[in-house]
Amino acid sequence: MADQIRQTTFEDIRSRIVGAGVYPFRPREIVNPRLPYAHSFVYIKRGKGIVTIDGIEYRAKQHDLFYFEPGIVHSYAADNEDPMVHASVYVDLLWNTSPKLKGDTGLNEHRFEKYDPKLSAARIEFIAQSQPPVQWPPAVQTSIPAHADWLEAFLSVIRHFDSNDFSTAILLRSLFETFMVGFVRFLAHPFEPTDPRIRRTIAWMQSHTTEDFQPEVWANTFHISEAYLYELFRKETGDSPHQYFMSCRLEQAKTELRETNLSVTDIADKLGFSSVHYFSRQFSKHLNESPNQYRKRVRMPIP
Image 1 (tube, one colour):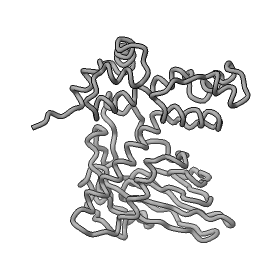
Image 2: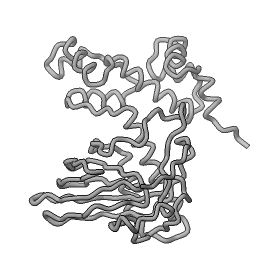
Image 3: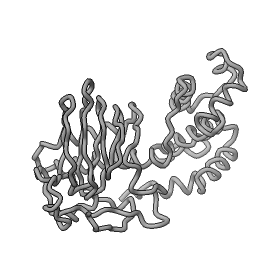
Image 4: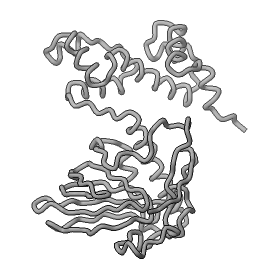
């Protein structure tokens, strides 16, 4: 019912949080159909239930994230034995497209005839060719990895929402947009390995970029053949172990280029590349610019 649609780029999002809180449902509790005035993000902290969106039922479970655009009809029904606990954030993604203020108790309208589109935040549509290359709006239901660090920023919005000091609006925006970046990156690359052996291998890769990856050692650790390790890894990630480890090293190289004064040669040596020329070729191949070009672009000049 909300017919405002604004085209924008992801980097132009300016979030203003108008509501946030945690709601523990009672067994079999029902919330009747309603229309939201803001973009609504609802995370299932625990429990189960049914979420109905535009007449379609979705089985909600722990770690699911639901997203409703302004004006989208939705309702809830909690499980009898294990009722849902919702963590919700309501936001105007472009700051001032809705007159609704922080703490407004009328962020959802149950009486459809009373719903006023003029009070609704604008829906958004990312401009073609803009980054990130993610379709928006996303699916209404997304299963979120339990350990996703960006989810903590979402929950922190709720923890800090009741603060009223001079910095609260900026803090809430910062936290929410940290969540948004993580969420959109996850939508672009929804990778969560299911095999604990691959999760363990990846965790090592991400924290040992200065060491050599030896697939035969890992295969022996898991009591499998090296060929089967490669098969498992490619099935879970789409890459070979060496390709994935290369991407981890290049991410660390970006950090070194941004945050240290080490020369490109020293960075290549630190990260175990056979030569600075090989490092530069790999960096340019994956990132479409040389290490020196990257460093020059991301470093702000010292005044």
